Image (cartoon, rainbow, N blue to C red; front, side):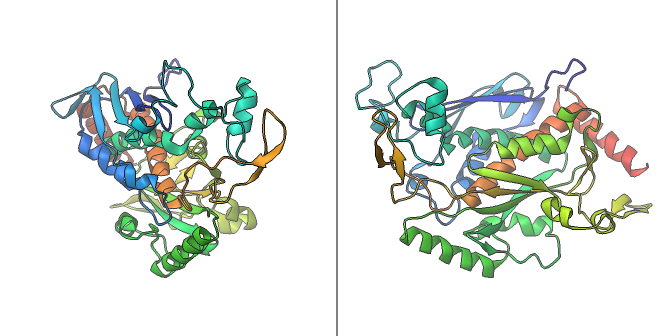
Length: 392
């Protein structure tokens, strides 16, 4: 943040699930960052990964149009705007027409576990589509677009954000007590569940297939890891500038995520203090480092130079192939809930969205720490920061 409290990097997105498309505006990017549409589209393709995705994933070959903020493959320092058109809009244009009249009966059977009923009561609407179109996880297209840009920025100073799946439907990957390396986590996309434990992945696939046969859905747990962070991103001074708080808020805002932990998280609550801290060591060539990473790379609201480790729990998607019992918001009669197309399991994809959310917060914190209107200034100041910390 600036001295007056203004956030230096921010984004705004707009669009509905079956509307014309998703629009994203990113403000505060430095001048001179290399950026092409292909880089953003490759991240959007990763968002479609994972065994258990629904039919829409085969249709959403998302293409990105960069509308402003880039010239000759480099950011201008002005607001960046991106458009991803919804390929199915033609089928929905009568229903989602911006200026035309509504041509179908209103949706009045709220789906349990979704935003439908709470949103309808909030706005006083008796058409649930007014709520569910924006509440849809289709909105995460915008977050992945922002994440792709922020990953490009972080990559300029050697910071990498990646993820992998730890658990689906109660089937857990075996950690073996060894923290994965960057190279190992970067290979997660090679597996259909994005899991580093191939045996666990096969069990997850079987669990997903069984849930599909039963008309059900599965949730799970994923882990996001950031390598290459310096010490001192974030702040201990104010609650809303603490890096862990900002990361938790960003990931918790992803649809269906119900829990976030950093480092040992809830497991740390079951340990004694003598088992939960990280011993500090120092070597001239390496500087300060820790023998373990129970803290997950964050101490006192600031990055400490170790890899950032964040985990999140995603609940099963509440829409299933079998309609759920509900109550009509107009007649107040018991009915079956509306069934919108959904995934059996979206945990691998949610991890990609979480990567993007983490990358955005880290990019914010990096710009706050280094300042600078251009990539030249950011690279120069980051280099000075690394040199100073290495000799601390």
